[in-house]
Every structure is written in structure tokens, then in C-alpha cells.
Length: 209
Image 1 (cartoon, rainbow, N blue to C red):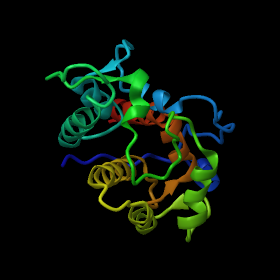
Image 2 (tube, one colour):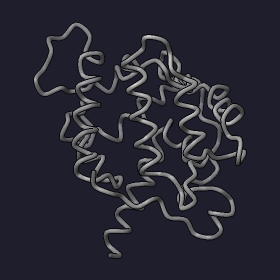
Image 3 (cartoon, rainbow, N blue to C red):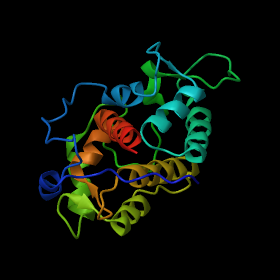
């Protein structure tokens, strides 16, 4: 698997516990379908449909290696294509319809998205209340594994795999230099704002190398 550099920090942001570019944000509105915002980053041509090659390119733009980006594109589009296209004949191109992305919500997750794709703040906070034993606003690698294990639902193979893959990719791409997933970083995943931050960081690394 191709390697990728962790998100960089300047001293001030490191002390404050934020990813560069991830400032402390206003609460996410609980009436918005923020899962659509999360998915929209991967819709590169903004036509409401995400194809595997768009998923691949978006993954590359946030710093993922070729192998991981390829695997992610196959996994994500195969898993979500038909569930987000209700009543339509299966397509060999495995498109994902952004407007129906909430239909692809799987089990064994944190519950921070509800069935309509809205952000559930209490469930988000619960992540840290239950699992942030070392730092109140961050998760270590072991604490992340504890979170994944705790959320497993019986006989939910698809949900377990989905949750495992999503959290492991996030940790690989967005952990800080101390191996921590910061709270604001995780919040940024839920509303999609983290992806633009990672994209800028990756572009900066390329241009400076």
C-alpha cells in the first residue's frame, strides 16, 4: 500500500489541538443533510453522481496512495451504488447518487448520522466521553480500535467492514504527528470540511517537494 504523510501542524495549532486549517467550528446544524456534504467532495464535476474514477481522484487529492485510492474506489462505489439508486437497474459503472447517500448509511457506526443523513451532536460527543481516555479531545490508535469494536453489531458483516475501513483510512490520512485523531478533525469528516483541508495540505506538500 502506498504511503501518505500525516497532516502537518504548526506549533500554535498543535498546542490548540487542531489540524492546520481546521479551526474550532460553530455547531453543525442538526436539520441539514450533512452526509450529502460529506459525499459531495467526491462528486468532482458536481453532477450529483459519483463514479469510481471520481472517488479514486478525490482520494488521491487528499493524499491517499494509488493502491489505497484504487481499493477505496472499488469498495465505496460497489457498496453504495445500488443502495443509492433505488428502483434502477444495476449499472456496471457503479455510480453513486449523492441525493440518496443517506440510503447507504451502514450499521456498526457511531450513530453521529441519523437515518436522514443529519448530524447527531450527542452521538458525536459520546465518541469522546466513552473512548478518549488519554486526551479529552483526541483518540489514540488503541482508543480508535476500542471504538470500532464497541460499535460492532451482531451479524452485521457489511457494517463492520464499512466502519473498519472508514476509520482506518481516516487515521492513516488525518492523524497528527503524535498519532492522534483530533476531535475537530473527526468533526470535519462528518460535514465534509476535512477533505478540503487535506487536499490543501497535500497540494502544499507536492509543490514544496
